Amino acid sequence: DATRVYGDGNPVVAGFSSSAGGLVNDDSIASVTNIIAPSASAQAPSGSTHAITPSAPVFGSGSAANYTISFIAGNLVITPRALTISADPKTRREGTPNPPFTTTIAGFAPGESLADLSGALSLSTPASVGSPVGQYPILVSGVSSGNYSIAFVDGVLSVRSATAAGQEAAINSVLTSDGTLYDCHFWYPLGHDDTLCLRRDPISHPTAMRPCSEVTRWR
Image (cartoon, rainbow, N blue to C red; front, top):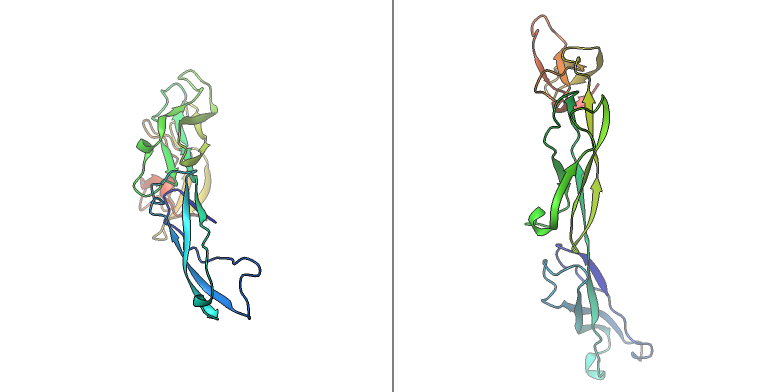
């Protein structure tokens, strides 16, 4: 018997066993060809079972002509595929509407998408326009499928102070892929929900900024 994950290719099934006392005179079987039923396509649903039929034994010693051979089929069972749906973190200023919520999804079988799941993806938060400064969960739910084992990962909505519209204290240094050094500041210009980074050499580049999410590594 064997298993495989929904959407994957079928495994090579090489194992076999022979009944006790079936072989005599130190005869042995080196290998058997196992054929998986054509019904076990990549789209075969999770939970389905498909026959694995053995045939064409190759004897290591002795000969198949000396035996009446009976083959007993095994089973290939399709198991659910792991799928993770994560709510992306978001930031907004106090007193402003919540931004559009988005997700990052990992694990779909090739060629599949949300359209292959049942239900409608739901993203919500208890935070409203009047919610005070703080962090609030971004809840993700609403879809299901027998072919997937779905893990929902909630995100975080950070509500910042409405007065934090300019530069505050630097929190760290960051290095871009080209080696440029930036100082990361809490900077929340209107309409921007990301922390920005101010370039280390403000004399030659006094207004050079970029989202901190674009830097490659923390110093």
